Structures are given as C-alpha cells and as structure tokens.
Length: 132
Image (cartoon, rainbow, N blue to C red; front, top):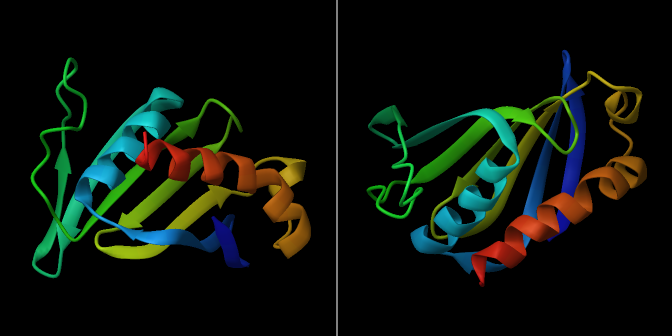
C-alpha cells in the first residue's frame, strides 16, 4: 500500500492510501476483521450516498455477513498504537483513508516520511489480509 499524502487537521492526522489493486466488498471485510482484532471498543459503520448506519458484527462470524455498501469505516482505540484510529475502505476502489489522533509524540506532525514509517506496516498488513 502506498501513502498518497498526510495532513494535520485539528488533533488528527488525515491520510490517504493507494492499494495495489481495486478491491471488492469481501476483501474489505477481511481487512476490517483483522483491524477489529486489534481495536478496542471497535465500531463499524457502512454507508453510501443514501446514508450511513452503524452495524453490529456477529461474534462468531465476524463481519462476513455484512450487507454490501459503498464504504466501510472501522474506528476505535488501536491496541497497536494505543490511540484513537479510524479507517475507511471504499468499495470497488483502490483508496483507503486513515485518521489517527495526534495523541502521542509519534503522531504529532504530518511529516510524510515519518508518518509512512509509523503507519505503513500496519496498512500493509490490512492489505495482505484482503488476499488471505
């Protein structure tokens, strides 16, 4: 996954990432399931042009049976970074948006190189989960 850009807005770093390939709904669900495992108090939202809704995943089946939508957002406190994180996958595209709180020294500035070093492995792991 390639970091396209990062900028600071208020107390958050907003970033946009480019996947290697366009992905469909089932691949997005695979990545979201992985992220959910490492997110405390995870909330899942799906939506499209007509609106957004919060969804409750089945504890046994995970997200596998969620109805297809235009996007999926997962947010909560990352157990890896120990700060709030929100990631949005856009269905049938190669774009992912990630927002992370400027709550630690590591995530204070929107420096492309340093931000990429901090987030790239995490984002690459999410992309790899799409293909497993």
